[in-house]
Length: 378
Image (spheres, rainbow, N blue to C red):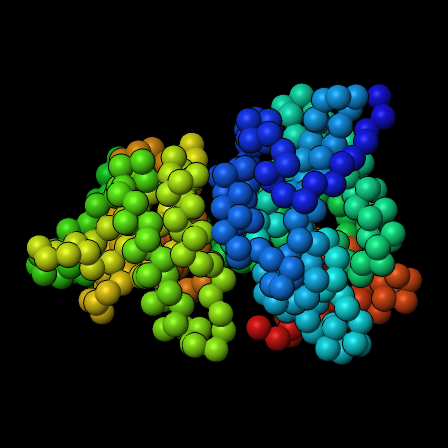
């Protein structure tokens, strides 16, 4: 039976139950509620360069696949390509950033996959989808289509994208993997003695100040905690990004997490006898835990490591969680039990001259079209 596509301008145009049924093996950030929070909170707008263009595939009257995608209008913020598109645009004056982007917006975590039913052939899904993406890009004069932080591990799907003309780029991030630890002490025993004693000393220092750490399920958290998470997010943003760059997220987004995404949300709270000192928010689905945002009201040595890494790892061991993704950035993670993993991205260029030029630049920068560009601006 032939497949037909519908382009919808927001997740609210699709039945949430249907959407989430196709999310059976997708990370929580691909679920209807999370994307709804992003779209309806006002952080994804045309002024910021985002227009939802979700592709819904039908066979007859049955929805067989959904590809959450966004039309990108300007390079406001782009994760995944290491600055490649901006570099090419500055070099040539060609709008390489204008196109279709398949990713979880403003969320640089390996989480993206096309949503399809358990009985579907993933290779056929991606082959038909990529042909339709080509049709859209060529019809609208888009310069690129791209998949950022792609995680679909179904056999053959990566080969399909390469065969369809996409260029593969890799980056690195950190992951913690549960190797069957029976306790947090078992985990610490994997370190060299000096590192193990240092981590224990850091945790003792936190405890000696009367600071208590707790993992709190989102369903149990008061609404005020979601609001305070925004305040702390802003504090962290201004510390590292300054006043001139507007924050990616707003208060409404965090409030909507409490309304729509509470069932996936977990907080790590750090308190003393007086009040909340620090807060980190995580998303959980099945055996996976994803660290997202953090902030503190008071500068306490080692509190960041305890709140964002050590205590969540203890929780993951106790809960039987298999994988903990703490979020991008920070070489310090590799000293605290996290290993390196590869993140996969794909870009396709449109227009004969632009394709040839982009591929030649990629080859010069990386030595091959399948590697990581090593001299791109960061």
